[in-house]
Image (cartoon, rainbow, N blue to C red; front, side, top):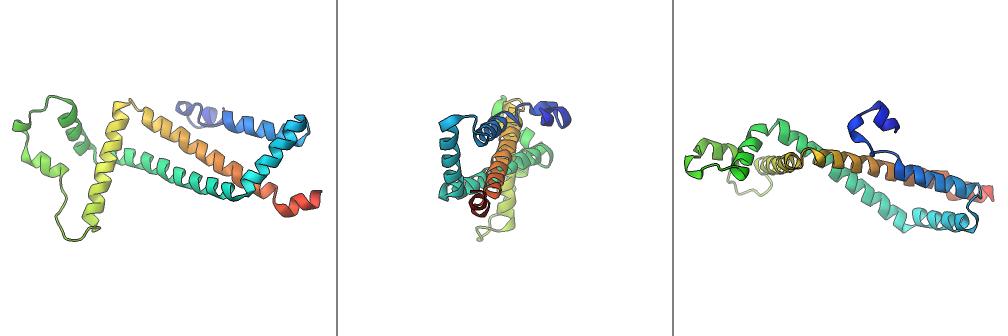
Length: 181
């Protein structure tokens, strides 16, 4: 609700519901309001987050954050930097664009890769960036902009998840829990 009210009305659902439920469960369990379930829940949560699976969850969350952020960047690049090429590819793919009337300069504009012996030179990386950017931008256009919205929601949820795990690991470090008992 806070994110919706103060940042953008288009990202409804991106913050809040799952995290709020998790924080309420943890709060009620720590206040001993959930009975035996609360004790079992906290023990399992602590074991899971502090163990090897917690480290795997952090790594997985970082990978997902990198992916969703990259996807948003690629969509933006496809809509700005490679806009002309994207429109041309969309026109070729989705309309009755006559290949016989195709301008050779259009094809060279899209396929501007240089044939070199090096596999990872700058032109190939730029070409891959162009193809990926145009592909994601076209997919977003086909979905009516929902791909950007979904990616934004999933990116924010991954930040919430990572923040929750890190916060829980810091708040309930072994030294603090041993001193509290």
